[in-house]
Image (cartoon, rainbow, N blue to C red; front, side, top):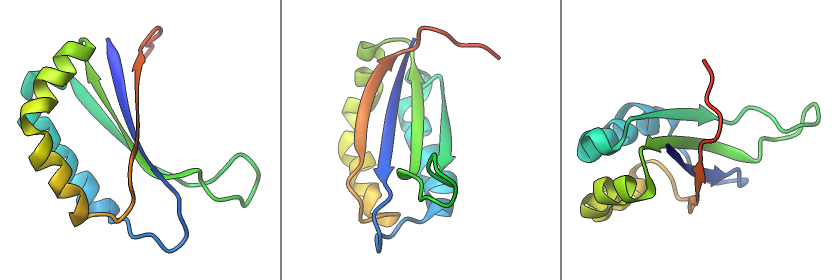
Length: 106
C-alpha cells in the first residue's frame, strides 16, 4: 500500500477554500480515480508544534493506493482535469510525496 500526500504550505495571505477542497475537489479525485484510490483523508492545519505557532501546512490530503503504478494509472489519465481544479480552491502550489505505508493500525 502506498500513500500519496499532497500538502499546501501555510503561506500568509494565500487563499485556501477548505469547504471546496473537502466537498468538491477530493470527491472529484476519488470519482475520476475510481478503485485506484482505495480511500483518502483530508487534513486542515491547526497549529505547529509550539503553542500558538501556525501550522506548517494549511491543508493536506492523503490518497491511498495499492501501488505507485496503480496510483499513476488512476491519476494520470485525469491529471489535467484534477490539476485544473486547483485554481478553484487555492493559489498555493502543492508539495507532493509518495510513501510506502509500513504500518497501518485502526
